Image (spheres, rainbow, N blue to C red):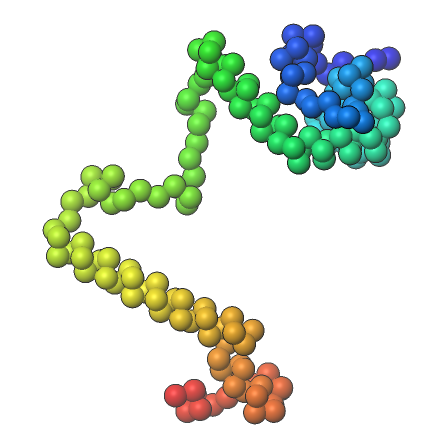
Length: 168
């Protein structure tokens, strides 16, 4: 029984994106190995459990890593998006942007601040960032908080925090 993951039309689109190196894969096994990768991710199965009709599991696994490292899958995705755009089949309603990584200036949201308010906010943000960096610098130099480091330097590794008056 031959498992076919791709139609011939899909394969015609994908094949140009897969590199053929000096030592392989051989063109006649290229589709077989690519379909083995598809099988692995469609089923969630282990590489070692891959049916032998896709080739040796170790070969398919190694090929996947080579393609991943060479950026083949990114190029394939970009090609697919480009082809969909040419056909007018791009649905931008499926695009999502995570607000934790995309930040906009307050003016982009329509907020209008007086110049003195904006200056005060920017100054406060800069001071906060400086304080955060100073605190991180102290912790990173010694591998712990300043209190813990001082306590350990005094020869007491009991883990008991020093009295508050020693922290001042």
